[in-house]
Amino acid sequence: MPTDLPFDISRLLKSGARKYNVPGASFALWHQGNLHVATHGVLNLNTGHKVQPQTMFQIGSITKPVTATLVMKLVEEGLIELDATVRTYIPEFRVADLDASKSITIKQLLDHSSGLGGDFFTNTGSGPDRHARYVERCALLPLCHPVGAGLSYSNSAFTIVGRVCEVVTRKTYDEALKHYLFGPMDLHHALSDPADIAALPVSSGHAPDPENPAKQKPLPTVFGLPISGAPAGSTPMMSIIDLVNFTRMHMDGGKAPNGKKILKQATVKSMRKIHNKVPIGLRDITHWGLGWFLVLGGKYFGHDGATIGQSSYLRAHEKSGTIAALLTNGGSATDLMIDLFDKTIDRLTGVAATPPLKPSKAKPETLDPYLGVYSTVAGDATIYMQDGQLMAKRFLRFDDTLIPEPPCPLEYAGDNIFLLTRPPSKTPAVWHFSQPDPAGRFQVLFTGLRILNRSD
Image 1 (tube, one colour):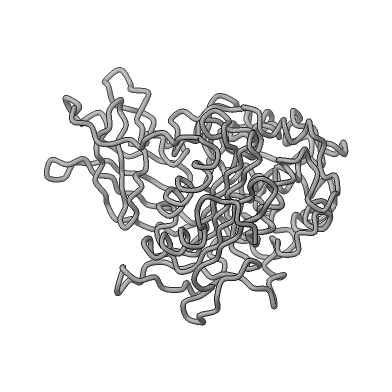
Image 2 (image 1 turned 90 degrees about the vertical axis):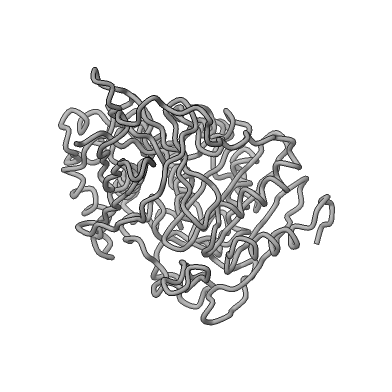
C-alpha cells in the first residue's frame, strides 16, 4: 500500500470511530495518484462480520450527483435538455401550484431551485412503476418558495428527474444506472435495486439502543426508506473504492479509471459551476452546482448522505486532485467526518474550514418574533418557550405517520441564527429565521438546507 501520506489513516479512523461510537466505517483518500483505504469495525454488531474495502454502504444523498451524472449523460445523447420543462417529458406532471407544474425545468430540479417540498417520503411499492406512481402522488406537493427564486434542498425533485430518465431511456432507473454508468465504469460494488444485494457484502444501519442510548443497536431491516426514493438516495449502495472511482471520473474530465470516456470535459465542469446560492452556509456548503454541492465557493465539490442508520460523506479538491470519502453505519458520524477530514484532506489541500458558530453573549431583546409553528411537507417545527429557554420540537412525516423528535434548546448565535445540538452529536444544526412580517414575526425558518414557512 502507498505510504506517501504524512499521517496514518487507519489509526485516525479507528480512534475516531471508537470516540464517536461508530460500529463500522470505510475511509479512503485519493492523493497524488494513489488510493489509500482504511476500514474499521463490523457490518452488523449481531454478526460481527468485519468491514472490508469492498463492503457496500448506503450512500444516501451522494446518490444525487450520481443521478445528475446520468441526466448529463442523457443530455449529451440528446435525450434531455436542461432548460426544458418536466412536462416536456412527463406531460401529465403536476404539483399543487398549476403554474409551477408548467414551468419547472430539469435544471431547477438538479440545483434545488424548483421550490418543490423536499422530503415527500411515500411508499409506492417495489414494482417497476414505483417512480411513475411517485410522480403521480406529487399532484398535491406544495411549493416552499417560488420556482427558480431560492434554494431548498429537495429529495422530491431528484425522484422526479429519475422518472424523466426512465421515460426517455425506456429503462427503469436501476437499469439506466447499470447501462450508462455502473457497467461502463466497471463499478461492480454499486447498486440501486435492493433485489441485487444477494450474496454481496452489505452494511446494516445502526441506531442508539432505546434501553441503553450509549450503545448502538442494528436496525431490523437493511433499507429503512421507501424504494420509490432511489434517485434521491433511499437505496443506492457503493463500496468506498467504487465511490472514489466514480468521483475520479469527475476529476479527470469525464474519463473513468478504466479509461472509458463517460462524459465530456465541458459537461463535468458545468456540473461544478455555481448554479445556486445557499442562504446560510452549512458546514461551509455555500453554493450548488448540478447535483454537486460546492464548499467555500467551490474550493471543494462533494455531497453528504444519510439514510436510516447510515451516513456518507464525500469531498473532492480539483486543484490538487485529492478526494476523501467516508462511509459509516451508525454513531455520531458527522462528528467523525469533521474530525477525520480536518486531519486529512484539509491538511493535504491547505483548505481551512470556517470556525463553527458559537453561542453569542448578546441576546435578542425579545424572543416572541421567533415563536410559532413552521411547516414543510416533511413535518412541523414548533418554537416555544420553556423556563425562559427557547426550545424547538419537530415532528417528521412519513406518509401518514408522524415521528416526534425530542425537544432541544436553541442557543442564539447572532443575526437571527440559533444553534441546536442534539446529543450525542457535538455538531450543532443552524436554524436561521428571516422575512419578518409587519408585526415583526419571522415567516421563514431555514435549517438543514430546507425552507420551512410559518403556518400558525
